[in-house]
Length: 254
Image (cartoon, rainbow, N blue to C red):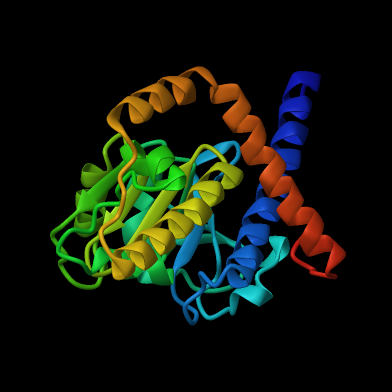
């Protein structure tokens, strides 16, 4: 093994350890945030150095049991290639086609407010709040619920609907958020639920006040020119999540 090959191997290994830690942290925080539903739903992340496989929580684990060390590695064909445990069929069906298209992190939940919004005739997350305004143009909508996602064909269809957006609202089902990192995808997941929550509460109270078009336009321009600041904020947020988990005695990083 040459020195360059060794450095690449060591770099990949370090990235893989950090990737496992981040994905495990996301599972633990999802419990804290009320996003977990039984042993269902799934978070995945492409294995650094291996674009043909992804990390997945083993089916049957409570998310408070998920650790960096017990995540399994799954090939794009759905076969477990490393680790102990089974791959959830829906996880493979939904996530593999998205990873095949180069998406690094894919998070799928049935979190309460976003899932409630997905059951409405008009399930659009509207720019009536600051969070809604920020996320509004990142969202694709699948209005054609076809039952349990258990086939690659259904996963390919969902990936087509997602297109180049970052979030997918699934009618009568739940949500998918994506990102280049776990931090980015989880940040979107958290603020999507917050935006859906305030929209549902405000809608129950009466007619909502929409943000003015000029403000929306100016804010979109600002978001486009402040991408680095947004990236910094995302990482600061997720690092804070991990610090709080660690301070609370969580063993997620083991």
